[in-house]
Length: 290
Image (cartoon, rainbow, N blue to C red):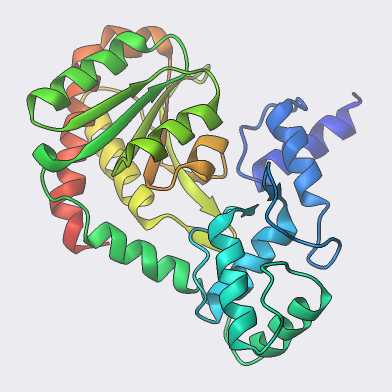
């Protein structure tokens, strides 16, 4: 690729909340394809695998702003989004078929003219879920995922959380979608992913897109940034991103990209203590503030 193309690709990755590499990997290619879809370009209907794209995200955002809850804005036309389309169609006196075609889009456009541009009901629902989560580690269900090279750190964190009474599911599948599905099936209250980074610092990511931000994820990312810094890890400010494992998990989720990896492994006991402390703070101090 020429330098201009690489620069454009890097800008696209940054704007889409992906790792900025300048390389067109699988996640970047998928994001490029999804970005081509605009609401109205195709019939949106529940399929297997689910349809994905910016058109689905626009539909979810529009429905959320008028009080119809699709869940988090993830750009995935799953069962919950289909059911929400059903509810919208029923309320508008349309044929209830769960499919978003021209008639449904026109109705949504007409009703949406009477609303503002706020985050919508999805943000309100998540705040309520965060407020209702367990307020102590001994009743918390935690999924701890790692993506290679950090299995010892993941096992250590899992062991210490179990000692404190938490129910823990360790995950080491290399595929982010598989990890997310396992965490969803476990019914986790929170997911913490560990990934080795080539950067000379650590950064914690939470789920964020232009029309939605995970408030629980942001709160936990701030807790982790604080406790890791106190443990002697060089940590940058947390950043909201649209990474697959954050997008597809249904609970509060963060991804800790730990670097430099050798320094992090040498500080494994301190990193373990920092993660446990951050979870404890997230369940107590932030329960009343998010």
